[in-house]
Each structure stands twice: as C-alpha cells, then as structure tokens.
Length: 219
Ligand code: DX5
Ligand code: ZN
Image 1 (cartoon, rainbow, N blue to C red):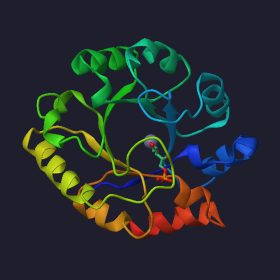
Image 2: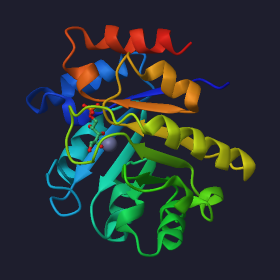
Image 3: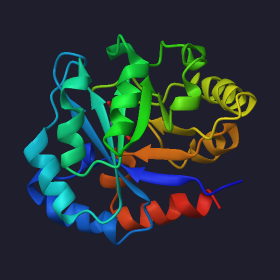
C-alpha cells in the first residue's frame, strides 16, 4: 500500500497570520496544501480568490491542491495554472462537459481532479475515471469547514476504489470534510489516498504535532 497523504486545508488557517500558518505546514509532516475556492454561487459561502492564493503560493513549498467550488470553472483554468496550482479539482456537479474540462486542466500542465458532493454516486465517473488524476469525495456538504463527517463516505470510497482497480486506472482518492484521528485509519482502509483536514489541524493546540499524530496513525 502506498503512503496515505495529509493535506491541511488552509480554509481553517488564521488569515491574519497566513504566512505563519503556511510556514507551519511547510515545516510539518504534511504532504500537500489544500486550498478551497468558493464563489457564493455553487456553494453558499465565499472563501478567498486569486490574490490570497498568490500570497499562499509565494511561501508554500509543497504540492498545491486547489479545490474549486465554483460554477463554470473552465473560465479560470489558465489563471489557476499561472498561480502555481499543481492539482486543479472541479466539481462534477458544476461541469456540463466534464471530459473537456479535464483535458483543459491537463493542457495547462496540472493534474486534473473531480470532486463529488455527498449525494452524487461515484459511478457517474465510470466513463472518465481513466482521465482523472484525483477524485475528491466530499464527506461533508461543501461550503464550510468544521462540519461533521458523513458516515456513508466509507461505502462510497470502497465502491470507487473497486471501480478504479477494475478500470486499471491510477486515480487517487481524496477525502474532504470532517477528517480527524477518529476516522483517518478507517478511511485509509476503505481505500483513501489523501486526507484533507482543516479544523482538526488548525484548531488544535499544536497543529504540527496533530499532523504528525495523523501520519503515525496511517503508517
Ligand atoms: C469544505 C471544504 C473543505 C474544508 C474541510 O467545503 O472543501 O476542504 O476546508 O474542513 P474540515 O476539515 O474542518 O471539515
Ligand atoms: Zn476542500
């Protein structure tokens, strides 16, 4: 089994101390930065946009995993590539021509991700899975940090893992929302490759130690 990766979600960072929190992730055992972009249309919340992402990437020294919770993401693919995104994830529910969107992301040199809302069946990706580098399974309804984990996620991950294996694809499975030390191991066992953790990391008394604790659990 390959290593399970940890991606702290910057949404839960202290935006008045963004450089400090980015450096904390740089110096921790975390693997990726998870960056949530919300437009107030696809989800009922607005997070931050390009200037803040630019400030993050100026200091970040690890893979930049951008999760777009926006309508019509095709309009911004080039802009996110220019800002240094390594992985660009769009929502299945926001893309009429998903295959075209995936091609456009890859044409800009990024890895292509697709996020699924909790109500979306993983089998909708059966015909595109070979073109997808990362599936982000939402384990909360997107829009806010700090929500509780939806238990049906385990079933979704198992079904998705089986589909990926049957298709001979190399797609990674990422879990986003409500991840803690209570569900991390079970998610790994179900087939998760990447765990996003926002509040659990940043609201902890000692964030680097909390990240290290997760890594220990997943060894
Ligand atoms: C939710 C975001 C998540 C969020 C996770 O819409 O996509 O990435 O930051 O936060 P926690 O870990 O607090 O649920
Ligand atoms: Zn996210």
